[in-house]
Length: 304
Image (cartoon, rainbow, N blue to C red; front, side):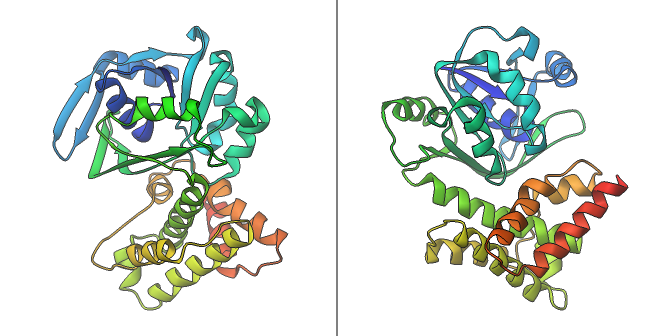
């Protein structure tokens, strides 16, 4: 299977490297600066097990040739419009596109551009970041990759995807209910991002602060009410596990949005929080805590 990994940041770099190491034909589509960096130093993975370096196949938008069987989109959501332009020449009659982005807005955007039958569901769970020299740093052993047809019909095309991905040295989950997985991932990451960005700290600091537990639970409840109104078929055991994970004061957690914010980078405020508020408005839901988070993030973006 010919695979194009759109992006070689922490997520794309890690999972693309694992696919390449497993013998898959993987090309990384990157911008000029990242292209030069990877050409000079290789793709460096720093994991809890040690450091690995590989020389990846690289391409820039101007040099893409031929069609790909699978395009995995791993960029930040605010870069999606440009990436769609970049990958368009690589999309052929049989190409499937698997976005690994935060939120859900991107699915409709990709379907509108490339067709509903081309876009499949995907998400990852990994604690990773880029180092100062462009190295991919895996912070914990967690490295899960979920994928499946958005309508649950994992036909022969999806079976081929699973065959390519399942032996890539990561924990893969071929799901027949990827939409619920996507809703639950959004519940987790938006709650985590909201409370960490608003309080400017990790969950341990928040939970040990006066009113911190109430803040976390209040944000969680607002988000759960929004996604349920939007079509999430609540799985009580799954949502209870998410809240339990977030509420453990012994395990300090932060989100990628919070890490980007503390470094002064652009953040996915509209895609992670703003879109929830738009959906809440459709159903006349009161979300005062989410509104406070959104104002906070808008002010940050104005001051960047």
